[in-house]
Image (tube, rainbow over all chains, first blue to last red; front, side, top):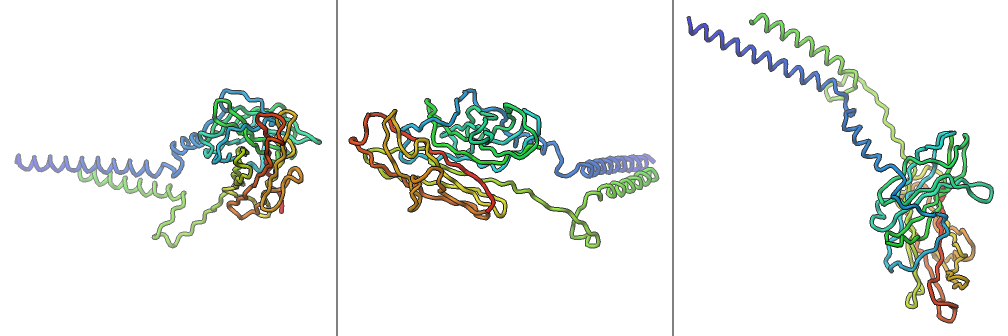
Length: 185
Length: 166
């Protein structure tokens, strides 16, 4: 009689364990099916990291009128300065706080800072809309404040990129003017 | 107990089937579902981009009066039917200055003398090419007779980059 009771208890235990296992598997399957693929928190985190540094470069303010002269401190095998191209800039109308992407390429590591000046081309001259501080290699400037707002339209603009050597004097080098379309809408 | 278990297992099977039905909203293509047709749109916006590398500076010495420096454009991705131009201009009209004193120098690309006018073209790249380069030649007749004063004679070059329709 006792033996039959024990066999019944063991059978019940087996059924309970089986039940728990089935419920656990059901929970796992439900969770796996409800998570959308490629839309997890890590995606949002990685996007944040991709945005990189935001701001106006290092503390030093530079008078960047582009009329500086080269120094005679370079060596024979001096590496050239890499400049990231910009083909067009789109800005919102009537706003001073805008988003751009000015980048000092990683290739300039340990060699050159860069400053960026956004110039609006006018009749026979230009108006400076924004001047950055020194930007370190591998860093971006993304949020800038313009000197004034712009109405809707397409303007001619130039991004003046002035590199500086990473020495104590921070001597300027040859520079680049990137002609670009400034689309305001 | 057996009855309870069979009821629970039946409920679990019904639940699994309903979950699978919800999951079918996201198209899944496997080797087994040959009868189902699923279509997705694949697109990718390739932004225009390029990296231009200019000579940081050119330093003439008594021993080195002819200098070559590369001008490189890499990672070029342009819209079809456009070209990328690089022009060069000099702050002092291709003269190195030290106060009022100045010394001429020449800049050439291949056999083309850039010094003949300001904002001269030095390199053109058509859309579809991924990299391009040119060798810039610099030469001066630097001598003590030509220099009025001791000191550093210098000039600044500005490279103007533009992308225009072909």
